[in-house]
Length: 121
Length: 107
Image (cartoon, rainbow over all chains, first blue to last red; front, side):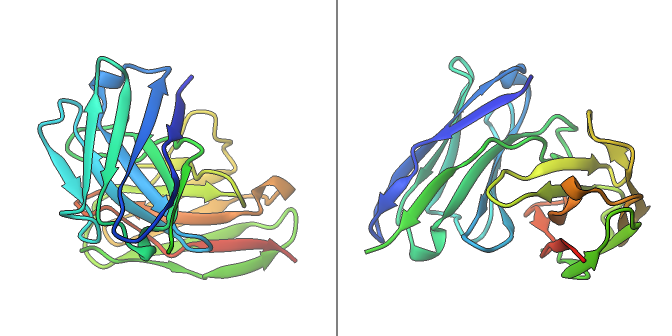
């Protein structure tokens, strides 16, 4: 059974940094690409970033490009999101999700429960 | 970027009703479309992918159709546990994009 546990959220001032983690179990982590998706309070879903299984390719939403970095440790079955230069508009619940489909068309499968990031002065 | 437009943004329905939600892509996405259900305070749950393929464990009252730019999600007989917000999402190309959501409420 797929199990995803996000952590690392919290309250941070604008311009600050946070590193989110996603501990994965129940599937072969190293064989699957992984996404981060976020949801601002009361708003819809927004895709943030994706990393392929081998970590050699990464993709970002324009809203976070140059500020956020996705990475993974396949030996620890863990996904990361380093968030720098945080803005108020980055405040959201952040979910990690695997892609169990094709590498060329990376769908979003099950999500964890999320970790809350609040950017406020 | 590919824009995903859902309609309606909200609807009221009764238990037992058949409900249809539509999703339109701003360009051809073949069948690289997924549908998600989200209940308040919960993570989104994937219902279907490839426009019409049910995720494991999802009941068959949910069905999807479409290809290209126009897609539908149908719930054949609405039950109390189906009242939620539904999102479509394209994964044909980066950046992946979601529709704005359809809130299904009790009439």
